[in-house]
Image (cartoon, rainbow, N blue to C red; front, side, top):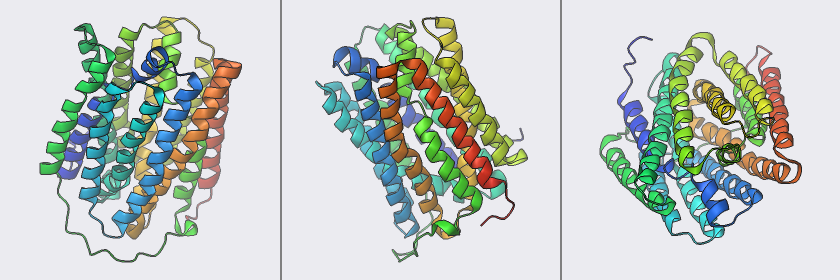
Length: 388
């Protein structure tokens, strides 16, 4: 690839995402085991916690995107969102029962809801369409880079003799650093005063954007929450100590895939990259449901699935940035995230219930079938040439 030459906004938000995911992923690989082994939660409870957390974030992503389009400072929304998450998340260290974890995950996702759509709108506005896939791919690569560093820090702290609660508390430190970077590094052009903006009509969206939002909803139902992937690996024979390393390796793969995939989406088009990634996801999910107790297969499938999911992230966001109306980019990103997050709740609960009631094979096969359905829906929506 040629020299990236990215704008300041992309570098600052990329570094912030790296630090945020370092803090977040010190906790997430351990949280399912903490819930089950320490707090006595059942698999269905994990699905409830993760689904409700993501649904909450997604509703707020639409609200914050709408506010950004109306003239509320995107920078302030982004800063407030990151602050909320990084002050709430370390308090999981004090949780004595799973409802407390539910409450704190809710607070964490409130922060994510506040920041995500304004942040994506800032990234989309920082470059032209010909480089937008690269910018979003770079941002996702930095995000996954942090998600690689966080588990490595957790592994080191566990090796040093700290328990899971102490690791959770230590996640406060990178969170504080990112707030300093964001506060002093992110700039924004002066925004217009708060003004009425006409509501975004569904029919006004480009056909490809409508197709993506609809397909993303189906894919959200099909998506296996990371908490269940960790539980799958744990029940597949991996000890707790190795879970952060597996998580780190998965995000190293995602970081390595995201930027080239975004660059490729700028060259060959968004739809081919997304379709290939979604089909790979479906095939891997079907295989994962058949694996029991083979550590080598657990490692291989976990990493391959991570690469398949990362391959589509930059292209999906770039497509929205390309075709959403200029005055409604924040709202369009909000609709995309809303579709994903709201349907993640029934999807996560359904996956947990299928696993608990009928076993992991049925749960993974159902996820694979829904993934294929989502990819098919997107292709049908984008097959016709007109964009309206």
